[in-house]
Length: 552
Image (cartoon, rainbow, N blue to C red; front, side, top):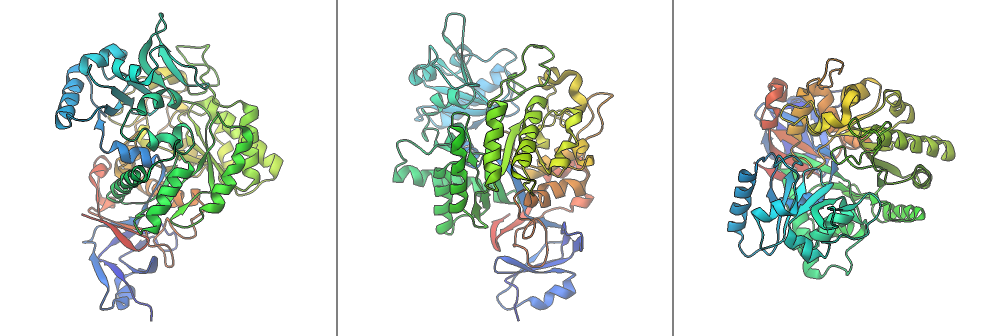
């Protein structure tokens, strides 16, 4: 008789399995769930070697499936100066001084997480020079679409007078042709990130889609694997057992495979082929090669990632009608409709999934049009193409997600109606279209599959903070419909929907007999926790692939 290696008892399990929504015990053997049910049906599977985990009457859920992260970049940023939520020159300058005092030998200071309006005035190199004039000082915006650099950093990168860059990227210059310090989008800010100890390798999957050139040395690869291990450990401490990476290159896959071969990959990771707008359209065929090389349950590639536009903050999100305060500005599309449609058609023909970053209502429309064109060209199939973010959507496009089988991959932690999130500059960018901004419940009620995630390190990785955001959002105008989620739908979006997004709903995303043993044992009864305090919930134990990957 098969017996349990791990037995979880005294549980309030929310299984996400419609045939058995609740259970009090779970037995695990190897990397699979052997039995889920009442304790009397499971306790007989205990053997001498069985480890028993007493859940203490607290909630047990399927392992969190983080549907939108930048793992490598987030992992490196765990050791940088975080300026999230910090405002005012004096407080920011003091934080920089404390950080530098603890690391006096570091030749470059990198800070991240700052808001555009953090200083109350535009951020410039001169402003940063007042804080730190003697070494390169680089400050990244929380959205990772803009960075600012002081004079030393701009000089060291050789971009004080600008440089030609691909469309949608910009080294902002003043009226005299001198860099202001603002660097918009990856091709611009990677020029200063190259000054950091990692040389910016952690962001190559996002910024260029290429591997390091020249190739990383053995020492650099070991350093980068250590960063990835720290990032995965951080994820495990938050109950996360699977991650959908949103940037990709062969190098990152190679690092993760090395960790897998060493037995050190403690979370499932899905990495896409990132098709940049600098690539020839035909290069999307490479994605099929990447899929053929990586097809396991722990590490795989089945997807193409594309950016169709930028972000609202910098007026680069693609709009249908222009911005309220810049009516002639429709945003900055990164692909023409013709090129985007052809890339999607080719990827879809190979049976690959496409996930497209689309924030403005124009970007969402262009994405849906491309997905529809692919279905007409290749034939309708269960493609589960995704749209990432959907911060704005035209009401006529809402039903198209269900019609086309498109998944809404959303980040509630960024919602403009979430308590604590600053309403500006988003309200000014959205204007009268606010009722269809961050429209999570509107999309759900229209029949779209809705999955939630964080976009870490754009936002904190903590899924319980994301759950709280989803469940506490308030309407921002009289005509705005409620978008707040209930607990059941929120948990589904962080677990089962994530499994569905990667075609793995037959083996994970639920606590069910025979499923992969990915489980989070929490320190609270979620059903008894008020919405405003869900962010305080933490895992006691995280189990991935039948192995304990975190213990409080």
